[in-house]
Image (cartoon, rainbow over all chains, first blue to last red; front, side):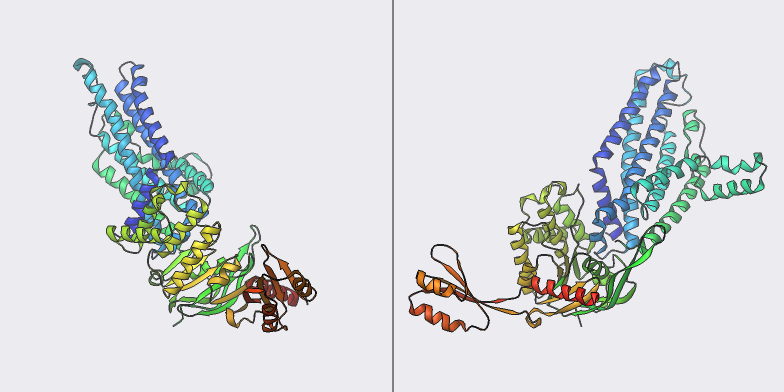
Length: 268
Length: 313
């Protein structure tokens, strides 16, 4: 096994024993379960509410995990000086960054799988308990496999957020890295708006600046296909491939940046 | 080939936020350490000891000069396969057990599962971590973490060991165990390069010392060649008459220890043989006779004091 794989397995093992992670996953599963009760309060929209809330809870709690564990991956090791023992072993610095990233993505994937299973369990229960006549009113089956596309895109989006968190954590404190990652996450959701700023501002400079920023920021809103999935609208394969390609390119740039900063850094 | 070779090794840090100014933490240190030597790297706080260890493991990069370990640049991946490093006040992962941590580190040296388990077990035995090896590290005391730190430095069977304050945080029994461990590592022919504030321990283990002050190497060499001043002799006797004690007390420093035992401190210019034979004639029993030297601590304080005096002038 390569050094990257060993570090990744170590990060996964250390992360899955973190009590904060357990609490987040437990809370997410509770939220997903509660969506069943909220769905009962709506007239005929229950299945859509459950899907919508389930996907949103998965995305939000996945984001918490990505940011809270992602920002601590490097900065916490530097602050606690555990990085000293790692870097004195025959490991290259870029392998540490890659290993940590892969380990956290693995942690996210497992947690997302748990949340996905929770959403499908609630939907499966709905499907079993509701009458056939009631089910005929649904736009899509309760346990629609097309929802997996939405979960996949949430995972890819969280991989991107993790790369952002990891990048910031290579040169700043956990708090600052969390704030910057959060800010970039919010800004990334307004990417499409930034691109259209030039249409309603008089200043050509502001318009060009907004357009320029939109090309630098990741387009995070593009990963949200909840509305399509809930309303049984197809999400094209070409779209999924394009958006995943966008994410992978962005992740690649961020990891190269993180490795570059980390490789030159003095650990004082 | 030297085990460690530092040539004009210099490190500047930038201090201050708005207008950072360079601070020289290490200033042109040149030092050679031969294979099998045990060198105590000594000096007051802030003298540059930890900075040197970080340069030797490439946790930081030098501003000028070079550091080589086993004939290769310090920090080179191949060099790191052959060294062990214990940082000062080591911290590990709370959620792992000592055994898991050691297996992880052994894995980073390319050991597969079975070999990693074997090495983890061997080094944990060696540092005296027994049944606790399956306990999460967050439940470990500082002394136990220090032992785990030493164990991880040994997991690759290193030729050169860099130990930054290995006695730190240990109780007297722990210090004794670590001292004995260092002696056994020395006897195996490994090169030990360690810093310590506990100079009596350093004195007991080291063959050589290097003394730093304000980033500069101010003294160094074999302990035997340092020229530690001979203070005189310490004679321990019993069955001695009170009149004889009174007579000795008029010229020498005599201390009653217990149960009729006395310690007599003789100046260096007084031949101990004469005193011993006089006491034997009076029926006193000689329990021990030892020369007393200036301690390493006194030597260090003296050297640092001299340096500060020179700077004031």
